[in-house]
Length: 220
Image (cartoon, rainbow, N blue to C red; front, side):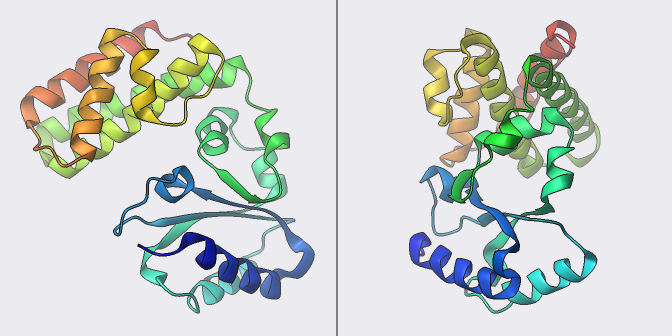
């Protein structure tokens, strides 16, 4: 485990040296952002600049190469204007899964209306359906199935938000809010996350049927 506070302090200093007052927002996503990181967790950093050029991408990459745990660093880099014109349905998970370090995403979150949440649910279910069918036929990969269950847990966060008007940050807390069918998907995700063995056929079929239902019944 790394000391993420110390690491982010070092990161922020180098970022400010490279881009000075051009940094609009910095945040952490994923397990470090949620306080659930393990020794193998990636460091998912979000950086939004006032604008982003190809030269900025190269400069940011060069800066990352000077940091410890470079192989663990991933995340999102963008210009502010692009983010404010992003597909709103993609912004639901982006905003709620990002812990601010510098600045605020309130201006971005204001773009996420009921239509965007509905589209996030529908698009997520469609992507999981396609991925599930493809994996059952061709790849037959346990790792892909784990990833699809993780994606499904994010869709269920959007479903819970639609039903309650509140974002539930931790998947285990969804179990007291969502339907029994959704609970089964979340429970399987949590078991897989904690190292349970994959029961490929049973889990694939359950996820396929769940995504099929949400494609048909979700609101456009």
